[in-house]
Image (cartoon, rainbow, N blue to C red; front, side, top):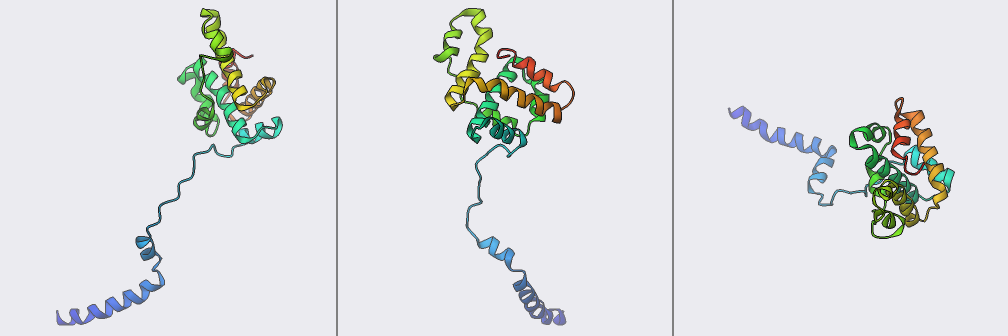
Length: 173
């Protein structure tokens, strides 16, 4: 037992000297800085980059425009049928969140909301055009953007996924 007690100072000094070489963990314990949090953004994915470069849009416009198209497809198809589209597009949830909120009280979609059943069937497309207007995107870029998404899905998704997209976007096609 006495021999064990004599070893304690030796053991502690050895740990102290070895620990100094690996003391970074001690600094981490005492470091009070807050963890860095980055703002959620879509992954700088190929789809957003393609829309930006081919249509001359900034990132906010590309993400919001794609989000408004995806939102129309999701509301038309329902969540279950929309799932393959969402799974094939990196950051689809973020894109959906980037779409401007629909305002059913104004714009073309507001007028159509008062037009009964016929208006309701056209309202989704009007909401996309209203969202494009809020983002500063010409309505004429809606079809080229749809074509880019379709091409992306043809390349990166399972068979029939781009057909689902077109079905979901029927109101603007």
